[in-house]
Amino acid sequence: MTAKHADKTVTRRKALAIGGGAVAGVGVVTAVGVNAFGSDATAATATTAGSSSASSGQCVLMSGVTEGPYYLDGALVRKDITEGKDGVPLHLDITVQDTTDSCNPVKGAAVEIWHCDAWGYYSGYTTANPGGSAPAESEDGSSANDQTYLRGYRIANGNGVVKFETIMPGWYTPRTCHIHVKVHTGGEKEDDTYEGGKVNYTGQLFFDDETAKSVFALEPYSQHSGSYTALDDDMVYEGSGAAGGLLTLEPINKNKIEKGFTGTIVLGIDPDAENDGAGGADGGTPPSGAPTGTPPSGAPSGSPEPTASS
Image (cartoon, rainbow, N blue to C red):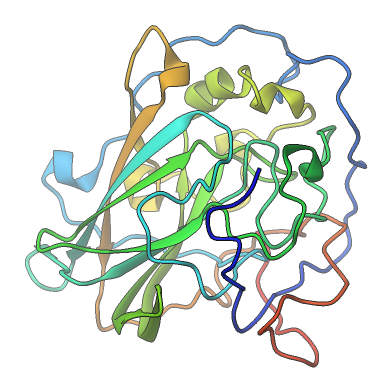
């Protein structure tokens, strides 16, 4: 696979995922169809999970959590962040509200997301071990650590809404299925990315276990077997439903979940606050095998900045 934006180099820093707690080595799966839940169950129709603050008529300040070890600056402003990655389509519809101003939409807010691929790999960290048994990331042609797949920004419209086209994330040890998110204000689009301003909110978006189980029984997810962490056992998800980042999910076709899902959520933020994710909820020890070689062009020299794990 040739990434659509392969000529874009990652800017500023590459935060190395460091720490103990090694996980099982990566290897090629020999029995396709055994999924992360330890069974060869066929995909079932996923159910709608959670309820957003929009549907309940409430305006709730979201719970902020850790940024995690796989963040990279310089993501592109774009709607489609897949760059050819295979997986079940996910259409994200995110609304940003100002919890300090009668739940008014936050026009111009920049929503940034990033997540792993179907086998648990993050762009920019393709040598980090996702745990369990999965094909090497290079088998789908995306071996370079300067890839930018499954990362991107969108700028909120007058209704505070942003839309992304991506895929359902896979998983990595010891985390449940999730998407990282930041909300920025005060900056502007520059050279195809977003510069300046401040981070008002850092959090994560989550998926109910039934939907995850259905997706992980499908290709290419089923090639990653091992011990998947259920939502209630996750070290980051706090169990507060939509206010804690739980997405409302609707299958596009209830009889063919491989056609994808629409995920919606309302992010209630304080535009005057600043939350870069440092010192947030404990994310645990990241997987072993983080890249230790030469960082991408434009990365800073010297010791890496410490980051919270997740």
